[in-house]
Amino acid sequence: MRIALVGHGKMNRAIAELAPARGHLITTVITSAENRDGSGITRERLAGADVAIEFTRPDQAPANLLALATLGMPTITGTTGWLIRLPEISRAVAAHHTALLHSPNFSIGVQLFLRSARDLAQRFAGQADFGAFVVETHHAAKLDAPSGTAIRLQATLRDGDPAREYPVTSVRGGHVPGTHEVVYDAPFETIRLEHIARGRQVFAAGALAAAEWIQGREGVFTFDQMLFGEAP
Image (cartoon, rainbow, N blue to C red; front, side, top):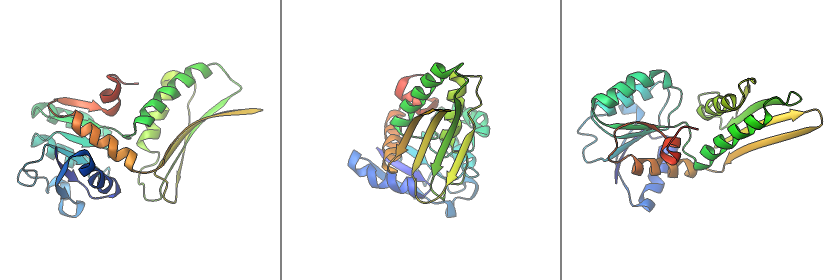
């Protein structure tokens, strides 16, 4: 598979390092410096690519995704903080008969973690002695807070137990790839459900698996739909 990378941050660099081991070729890397408002995404630049993988910034992603859809390029994106524009981008994907897979987190473990969190929330429903909250920790350079995964986790927990708010605390510091924790705390005991990413390679592997899966498909998908066939 031939891959065009949009963005040259830490995630896409990890993808570029891992791609050859899975038999894939990086055909081009479009950096943010040359891609103001998606202007660097051209048919000539994408020539020969089978799929694009986009990891940039929340303010850059919508223009990038619209440009890629207009060119009919199947796209994987892990950028967060842009979903308010999803209806517009989905229309462009449909109009140009292409595909988009988006996810705030490309870890298979996180998708299983979300399902476990929903099940746990259902079991804790009505247990008033337990307070419940979410803590998420990421490296100092991460721009959005709470993270896209934390927002998804909060929504999943509320689906399991609508009576709780599940407030989120975000920590930004150091070099942490990503830690998400659900805490239930009572006066004399505490229960924690935690996912810890030990490196960006786990997200890179998931993004590449998504790029392989999206070939020949049309429409807008999420990573959990790819893995399980339905939303959690």
